Image 1 (cartoon, rainbow, N blue to C red):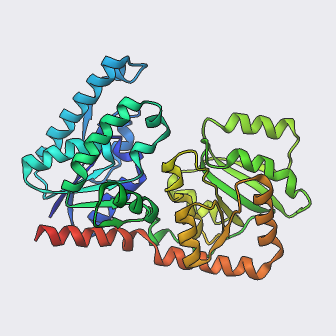
Image 2 (cartoon, rainbow, N blue to C red; image 1 turned 90 degrees about the vertical axis):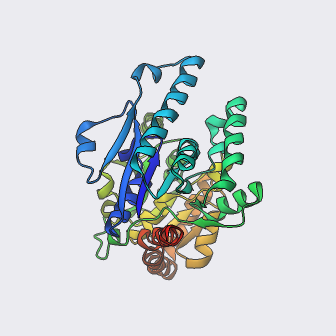
Image 3 (cartoon, rainbow, N blue to C red; image 1 turned 120 degrees about the vertical axis):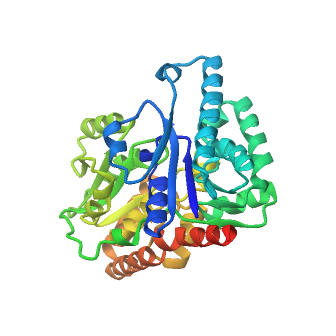
Length: 377
């Protein structure tokens, strides 16, 4: 069996795609990646990828404040180029990641008469930027409606998102492949830092709770052995730093960003992980925080927002505390509960490890690989 793993992005920047390809290769399956040489193209990074990658190249001027006609041309040319690259792989299965890659992949599968998997990483049509452009949303929606019941299998990252798609498109079966971490990533022997760190790591963007934690820190100043730790980067970083400085908040620290492969070992130095997701869109509400699995692999109890998939996982594994709301006071209360109740903390810590061991990438993605093998026989 040969798989064409297609993404309308730079292959090396999508962790889920990289994990997919690594798992295919580890199982002895021939795979070829197809993507886009966007403005972030880095020849040195591409050279490190241990498998064949084909990239279509789009002139950078079409990414630099393009007008409407340039955006349309870029979309058409990218789809045509991706279609040609996919067809050239002569694969048995096309694995299309997200709706934007599904469109060229669908027409390529018709040409090649091969199997097609639609791996939707999110509710694409409910992205905040999509909701700002109703015409684009309508066009993308027409494509998804036309194609989604014509693929061999739809894959979703959460049970909540899968239920939503089932109802919207009357799909009988969706395979949930949680975007968890590899079993090899689980940390068995952690060296916890002192003071005890309440960690939120990732990219500092809206809706992920980084700004909320700056308001939490003053509420737990009496916990002298606890500090808030933010690790990452992003557009909110400067405003958060300014708030911390102006309000003389001394129990919040900014940890330096690390490479992806260092993320879990560094998280293992913390005491508790925080996964706040604000429901600023339906896509956010039906998602599941990737960092939740990273914290679990690091052996950390997790303080998490009350969204469907977090609630589903915590009811099953009891590895953390579900927030009553995302308010600073409720986050502070959750920190206090884990700090003051040692039995609760230790129980959540044991269960976090259990979650990481039972919900790992090898098991989750392995179910999809087994299905692909079955339909190719």
